[in-house]
Length: 229
Image (cartoon, rainbow, N blue to C red; front, side, top):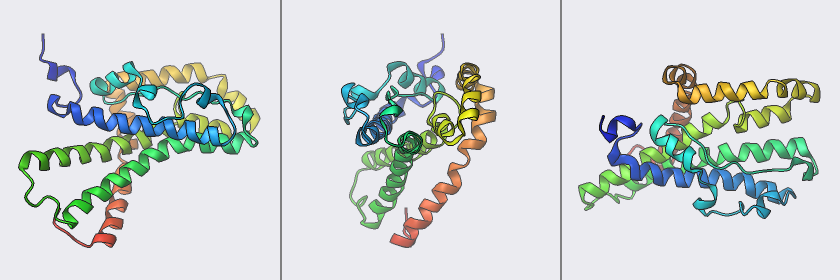
């Protein structure tokens, strides 16, 4: 039997940081869906207790565990009834998009804090253990939220990108892709569980996060100037 480390995607020592980041990322993602749907007149998320920042309501046990094993996972999806919206297609797109955008925003905040701390010399006098812990936490806060932002925009069910695509397409095309929805879900599962396929398809997509992070860094350099990180 192999060591615990051999079964995990992340180092054992990093698990607390990853779990904390996931609680933040998944909670804000699902809350954003629920809050916006509620504001647009759909009572479904509120009736199911999803308009809350309580992580227990949003975390999916299996989806969270899978993150630690495969590097990807999910939270409990927010149920939305688009027929309650005044403009179902437009409001549906917004409700679907705010989830991934919340992760992009958190990644931006992570980069902001990463530059803010040395700018105000907050590491000065800090013991090395706390310094390293903050660095690890911020690293995961930025990278995992960027990953979730890009991953959730994939046009595959049950991801947000698929819901956005459905609302963007004309009705006849929407009905057409629904015929293949059950097979697309199997494609999604294969991407999740097959390591080689996972890397081949998701690798180039996740690489799109690099220019976004460079843009964020450029913004921070404009704000704070060149500082010793």
